[in-house]
Amino acid sequence: MLVFDEGLTAYDFGHGHPMSPVRVELTVRLARELGVLDQLKIVPAPVADDALLGTVHTAEYIAAVKRAGDDPDVPDLEHGLGTDDTYCFRQMHEASAHVVGASVEAARAVWEGDVLHAANISGGLHHAMPSLASGFCVYNDPAIAIQWLLDHGAERVAYVDVDVHHGDGVQTVFYNDPRVLTVSLHESPTTLFPGTGTAGETGGPGAEGTAVNVPLPPGTGDAGWLRAFHAIVPDVVKAFRPDVLVTQHGCDSHVEDPLAHLTKTVDGQRAAYSALHDLAHEVCGGKWVATGGGGYAVVDVVPRAWTHLLAIVAGHPLAPETEVPAGWREDVRIRYARVAPLRMTDGRDAAYVDWSTGYNPDTWLDRSIKATRDASFPLLGLDPSY
Image (cartoon, rainbow, N blue to C red; front, side, top):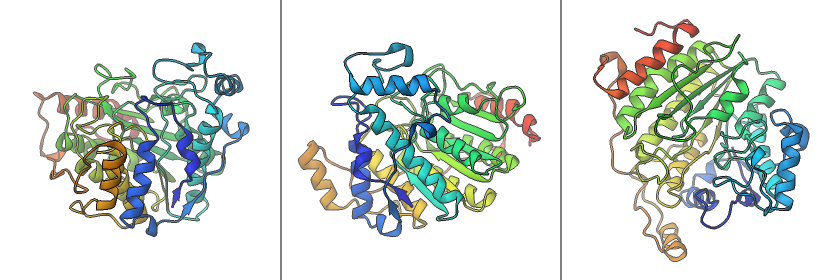
């Protein structure tokens, strides 16, 4: 299932901002032309009310967002509104609440058994804090969707975040809640916003082990990223035994993304999406809620990556060598004066060397993997040396 309607593209910080809604529009159009949407139930998104937003955000903050949307020229820096990254815009509260409604509808449909998998590619706004906008994120839709699941009977929820930036907002919301496992693979906090997500951040009192962070060195590509993922994520998620898996799929880890320094390809991202799909089926009967996230190469990367995600959600993955439809490419040429990619692949083999082959202390990557395993595995009853 895809939760989408045109109103979700109203989450728009304006001309020149990196987080353009064009990326969502182009993804939906590409997925439609490739027949992916024919395999998915598509439902419109409700708008979250204040009570739902208030399960994570403070009433004071919600009021501040409403004021900022009514008068975007007046910043509210105390609440992170009108900063250099999170601009104010008209109807900001309504647009942000719409994104939340889409993620909660996806969670509801999965939890109540309407569908096995559901996606909201406009969501994944993982930096928003309970009383603070941050990193292009106003309301934290993944956190609110997770809280909805907990409030409606889920005993344990696992959240895996593959955005290049640390999923700091979701981690903060649930840092002291043993019912939620947050796992984030991201570029090292020493080189990238938001500067958090070290291996030593493992959960608060009573929730030790329920935050797992995998900081990766700049320059990490498909092979290194997938080595880290498979060395940590399946083991910790299986040990946690969640009722449902919620994932955030920022594709700003791509080599062409302008805001970060990893070097993944669409092929590596597709491999990650497939691994998360398979993990959901292994640990929680396939119950999987997927959101979008970051991604600022809005023509060349995001539409292809998220179309692969939607195809996997639909249960009909696209072959990497699939041709990008000529009509979509022509539309990109006319509207954006860009030459779009020819195929749904970057021509890379998403192979990796498994952790079981041995640890190399001379590499930053392996030292990072080992630090996370050493910090988190014992807290979850796992042997970090295995």
